[in-house]
Every structure is written in structure tokens, then in C-alpha cells.
Length: 282
Image (cartoon, rainbow, N blue to C red; front, top):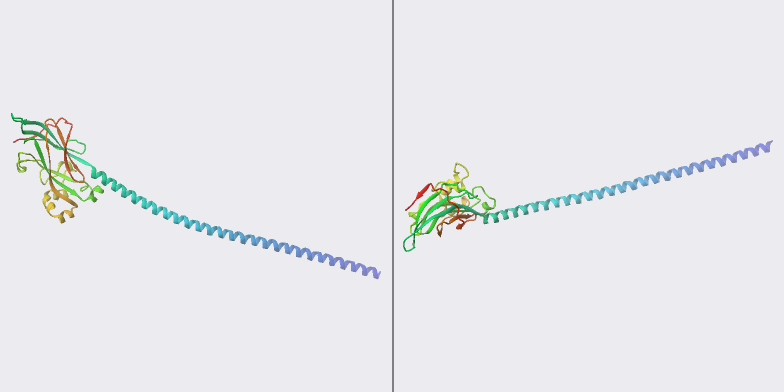
């Protein structure tokens, strides 16, 4: 029995050794596999974190570029806006400088001749006009010596900057009709049109004349002779100016003023004159 028991013990010991060895191998293999899986997962996590960090850096860089582009676009938009405003001002200034104000109409009712056919006098009718051509004053009728009619005026021209921005009071040249006379008369013998110190009808914007307008016309010759004082009012030039034309019976003439200055008298197709309420003759 002794040898058999010893053999059984040896076999059992061997089997236990094999089992323990297998268990150790299994545990070692499991630990190795577990370690490898943990390391692989950790490495994948680090890789993902690194890729995420790189993506975040790229995103930050793109956002910075986008912000820089947006600022550049905003700057360009501001430049375009300023350029467009300048173009608009220049276009406005150009259009205003070319704009004619129709200020008055002169209708020639009759030209009287002597037996030799020489013009002795003419009967004319003068009426101030609104920009749309509608009469804004009562027609005045005059008998003028000869057939060449002169209209004497005071003209005020303002600095271009006021014209460019269409200033309410200085956005256009202004004209005051002083008197009308013929070539056979002296200006002093002519007939008054607008009263000095009063607002010309063409520029009436209300019942009350502004202080600016009062100074403009009451101190006209002071501005004409004092450049410093004129500059303080934005006045480029103040001077008298007369237009004249040899009239034809039955014709009508428009008296116009360009915003930049310059008075003209031009024939127009004759329209039926307004009924005169103020008759003046020699």
C-alpha cells in the first residue's frame, strides 16, 4: 500500500502543480491582456485628447482668422460707405452747381415805335416765380424807354461747402431784384422791384424773416466791401449784376440764377401774362 499511496500523492502533487501552473498562466495571461487593453484604451484616450486639442487649436486659429477677416470686411465697408458719401456729395454739388433757379418772368406786352420805326418805349410785365413756375408775387407793369430792358440785381454767392451739403440758408446763390430800366434811362431813374431790407419772394420760407436774411440784405454792400465780414457769413462774393435784352413784342423771358452764381435772361414761348395790379409808366 505504501508505494501506491506514494504514487497517488506524487500524481496529486503533479496535478496540483499543473493546475496551479495553469492557473498562474491564466492569471498572468489575463493580467497581460487586461494591461494591454487598459494601455490601449489609455493610449486611444490620449490620442483622442491630442486630436481634440489639435482640432481646438485649429478652431481657435480659424476663429482668429475669421475675426480678422470680419474686421477687414468692416473696415472695407466703412471705406466704401465714406467713398459713397463723398461721391454723393460730389454728385449733389455738381447737380446743384448746374441747377438753374427760375426766379422771374418778363412779358413784353407792347413795343411802341415812332414814324421812322424806331422803338420809343415798351410796356413790360414783371412777376416773380416759384421753382415750379407758378407766380408768387403780384405782376408789376412798367413802361420802359427804348426796347432794351435792363434788370439790376444784387447777387450773393456762398462758399461751395454750403452748396455741397445743401445748407438751408446758404445752399444756393441768392438774388434780390433791385430795379428795372431802359437803355434811354439811368439806373437811378429805373423802377424798384424788390424792397431793400425785405426778403425776396422767391426765398420766402415763412412769414418771419430770419436774422440771417435781414443782415444779408440790409448789410449787402458792407459784405461786398469787407471780405473778412463776408467770410464770417460764409459769403464767397456779393456784388451787383445786371442782365439786359432787346425785347420783342409778344415774347416772354425767364430770368434764371445758377446755384453757383450767374444770372441770365432767356426767351421762352409766350404765355398769357397774369393780370397786372401795379402799373408804372414814364
